[in-house]
Length: 441
Image (cartoon, rainbow, N blue to C red; front, side, top):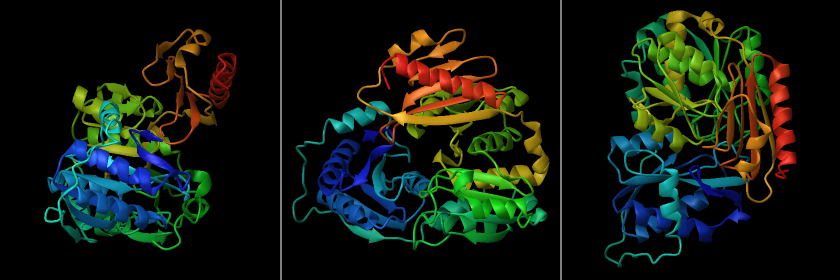
């Protein structure tokens, strides 16, 4: 699969050395010659793809710096800070261990848009301008560059380090033995918290399901419920998505991450917000508290960033736990999210969560067979505001439903949210019935 989320597939069955070289060459030829940064998560086959990408980039005359195992947001941040030409992250994010992917990063530390993705794909068959023997690009390794990302978060005016330190928080981190295993605990220690590390080693990746969902994080949830720690954070294998929990209550839905980060930022500065169509109404409620507007974008980090630039948004993100705050990083960034949320907790206490209304979000998926023809679904929904920009999105006064094909897996995703679980389940059932009647299931 090639989408705004990169080139992705099961290793040896979809993603292989040949298409890795072709897509890398197509991206680099489209993006231009210069310095490229490389990084990966901890998947056991990551080094294979790093070697392929490195050789391809150098063979096209580009210089390469390998950052080693590094969070995706850190690499994007450094592409911008170092003014590199681009970068490539070898990671399949939340997908299971048999998957891998190439995430292409252009100048400025952002992912190519949907339109640019189509331009890149047109070039996968070449021709490519391979470097002569005396023009092959250089190569360096820098496995400690991630510390720059941590250091720069600590000096942000939006992160109140002194206030956080004054609370002496005890924080547990589950990094699923992934790319953020070192950077996130280091950031939290610099913020003066006592850190309990769970699955923070690059060995034995993914000791539980890699997607940061409460049902996969039994140990972290137990520590929170027992009151053994004040705050809990969990991330996915590449460290761009963040889940949190608080003492006595346990882990929260991933849908709380962006609203709480938005709350933290809007306390200091007002500005519009962008989230994707599949994100909770919780962000809308926070925005209304501060008198700012929420804009919706298609699912996919690149789409949200593009919309944020279009409307001049201050902060945004995706409901899966991806905080995007361009003043610190133009990408989903779990480190930024954790720092912003701890700043909020240090000033408003954990009670700030109780200021948010209760919503029930239900998520379900179905196999994708053939082409997803969204127009077939529209006749089965009425009475709400409808958008066909990204699958089908129907918004009612205090509820919504979203039906769309996934960017990362061959499935149809159905999300629905309402004030009661029964209403949300009813919207999912309505969506399933519509898919069947439209001949899409």
